[in-house]
Length: 134
Image (cartoon, rainbow, N blue to C red; front, side, top):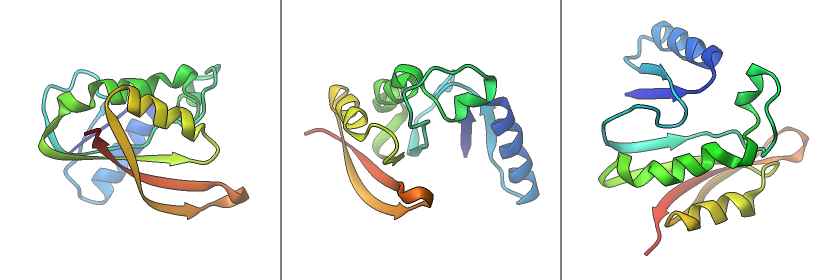
């Protein structure tokens, strides 16, 4: 299993949690796919939801200027999935859902909602199965 994150604090935390839970997870600092050179059966992506400029290092967990991480995910996804592989993505109603779906479509994918949960402050969190457009 492999996990990547752009935020060094998140990488450190994931490594500690993996060790504490006795899980064998290779945790790497990378922006989306980074320099990963393999294909996967399952890919899960939990991006920052808001198109906003990052001013402080910790803000990369929350803001994604120009939705660049989302664009990079969809641009590279097909090259990282094994044949018959599956991809899932999280999103929230406080992000621009129409824009995220438009980016997916531009790269040949269709997000199909498979779950939702209402969170604090009335926001809704979604889970999507990302399918190639046919």
